[in-house]
Length: 377
Image (cartoon, rainbow, N blue to C red; front, side, top):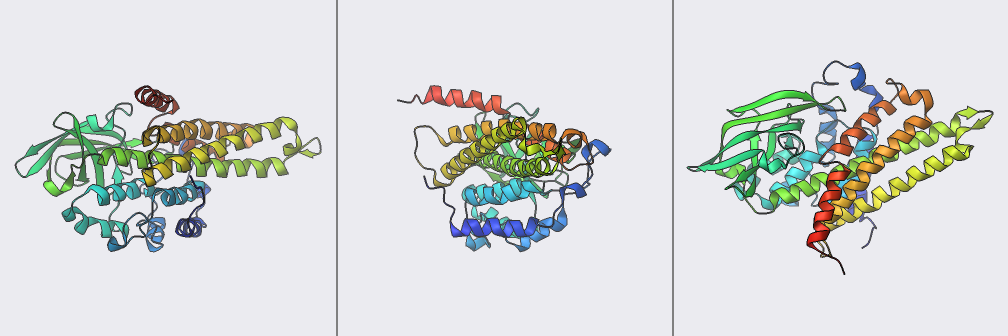
């Protein structure tokens, strides 16, 4: 495996750094100080800049106005986004477009992909099931009705559901087959109950009561939901990596300037050892992320399915980002507990990313099942 990024991938990361350069995380109120959500909508101005930089169409083919890049490029961009806590549905939107392009029909592609790539339509994904702990595809049922489909069920904690134009909803059809339904937010039978995330962002409980969709609005190809879930999980790991990298740099800067007994905190052995341990966490998060993103992109054969690499990456992302922000708060002393200091928002985002799409324990269990089903040696 070659970890060297291509020129196109590096160009995408560079473009992302330019777009996110002016975003300040401390410009958004702390969730601890805000009644309700920290904002009513996602950052539309930033969304427009991402569209202008062709970063919303990163994974789309050239025929749809995209760059034709891969999951590795998306993860590079997401890493930059997390460093500034960018409040946009970049992960959900990009992952959904990639899967719809690969598995959707021509009718769907011609009417949606190019517009979504330009940012004219925003997509999100319902990936947390009814409770956040059960498989998402089992929370909604889809049945054929004449020339279309009827959906019933509920999905919890749908990110950006109150603001996105379309929600991609996994559903169970024929009892054992997962399909993806494109549900317009304003469709008859669609209900949204407002929820709030750990980060202070608005989520939505999506309720579907006999929602009728046309045939072209439901993707029935086998493997579509599995691929989307993989992309979402790896993208979450990329966000955790970007956040962890930023927090570790904040900690390094603080301990290098803050003095006790006439010496910078960073020169004390106890501080240096803790920072070094977190640096090791960060490097492990990075190598497992790129392994998983590469396997998804190349669909390369291996001793274990791609899902195993994704599980390993999420285990390290969940455990690593938690340890990084906890150590940062400890080494920042009183500033670590100050809700007006930006570190507080990074801690809230880290907890959200740690648990999103399953905590480390859930992925350890999944990895154990894969090892049992595919014994090595």
